[in-house]
Length: 200
Image: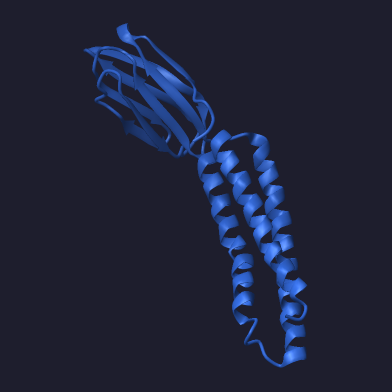
């Protein structure tokens, strides 16, 4: 096949950015390591440049092949495969960016009932947030997520065996600012709030 090196190069220009980008994204999902966000941005910008180079190589390959054979019959399928691999980078990159934005702007809360008593009610309140997670049986946990709609404090109120419990989950929350906290309810109305370990 004439000039098949250009076709192979276009394939690599599609496969390499896709593989590297997805790998960095999966690592970020598992660790939420902040540095990987900057690595991911670099991979996206560099990857889009490489994809454009790949499209140029594919175009040059098809043009030269046409000039030599006056036909694309025997290269149409491999060319379409290469083009598909190149073009799929764009929606995949867009999806990754949207997912990262969602995670970074969403507040996640896990409430754990570590006591031997039933938690009849557990309510989270913040600007634009009013979430009820009760009742919660002993030894069980529930998770929720939400978007903050303004400046304020994320608080909780709970009812445990007729005992009212109040506490602060986050001292300051605002629109577009996410987080990931765990509220652990213990016996006697005691509780603790801590940052959840990073990762999915």
